[in-house]
Image 1 (cartoon, rainbow, N blue to C red):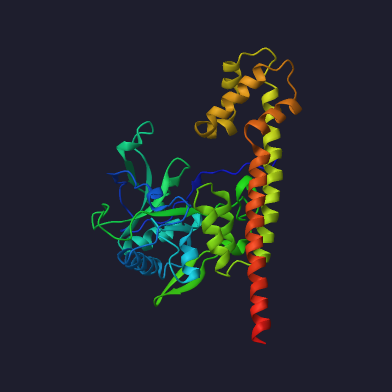
Image 2: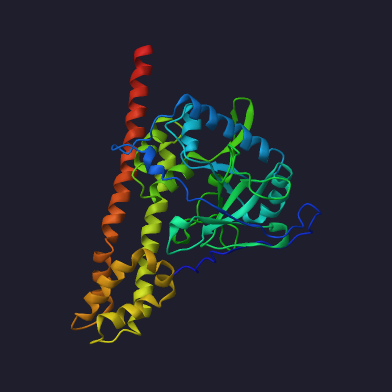
Length: 369
C-alpha cells in the first residue's frame, strides 16, 4: 500500500507585510445557486445569452489582470478550458475555477490583495442545515493559515476594509490546490503520479489579455473522475476541439489502470486490518461501528454509510469470515468492477471520437489533393 498523502495543506509563514498583517474576517453569504438548472435533459449545458457571454468575457479578462505579474503557477480549471480551446462557449459556465500551488499561496495572497481580492475559506454555517448558507472566513497565508478538506478555498472581491464585495462580477472563484507527494510530484487518485506538464499553466490570449489555461489532458482526467451528468458531454466537446491527442488519451488510460490496481490493493489492505477486529457472530450494528471507526472509512462515512451498513449486514450473516469472502462482498456492494468498467468505456469513447476525427481529416486531405 502506498504511503497515505497528508491532505491538509500547510503553508509556512513568511515575513508579514503591512498589507498582509490583518485579522481573520468572518462573513456569511447565501447558499450557492443550483447549477443543474442550466443543464437540460440530454446533459447539455444551456446556451448562454448575449449578456451572459459578455459577463463571462469580462470575467476572463479580469482574472488575467488580477493574476498578471504574480509569478504564480496558476491556470483555469474545468470546462471553461474547453470553451477557450474551442473559441466559443460550449454553454453557460456558473463560475470560474483555478489551480494554484500550495507553496505559492503566501505570495499570491499579497499580490491579489493589491488587486482588490482576498482568500477565504468557505464552509456551511450548519452542516445539518445547508439552507443557512455559508461562512466565508478570511485567511492570511503570509501568517501560516492552513487549508483542510472540510473548508473550501475561494478567491473573493474585497473592499478597503477587507470585507467581501458581493456586487463584483468576478467573485467567489473556486481555488484548487495542486496535490503533490513528499517528493513534490503531482498526484491524483490513490496517490498515482501525474505528468508534471499537466500542471503548468499554458499561456492563452483572450481578447488581448493573457490568461493561463489547463493542459487538455488534465481537463479530461478530472472530467473522467467526476460523476456529474454533463461531464461526459463536456468530454466529448473537448475531444472535438482537436486539442486532445491520442497520446494524451493513452496516457490517461494507463494512469486509470494504475489507479484501478492501487485502489483495489488499498481496499484489500483496509479489509485485512478490519479482519483483526471483526469476529464471527458479531451483530450487524457492532460490525458497522467497527468498520466506521477505521480511519479510511471514517473519512468518507457520510457519503458511503448505506453501503457500509449493507456490508455490515452481509458480514454479520456470514457463517465464516475470510479476506476473500469479505472482499467479494465489498466489491459487489460498492460496485467496484462496474465503476472501473464504466470509466474504461468512457475512455474508449473519447479514443473513438479522436480516431474518427483523424480518419475524417485524412479523407478531407486526400480529397483536396
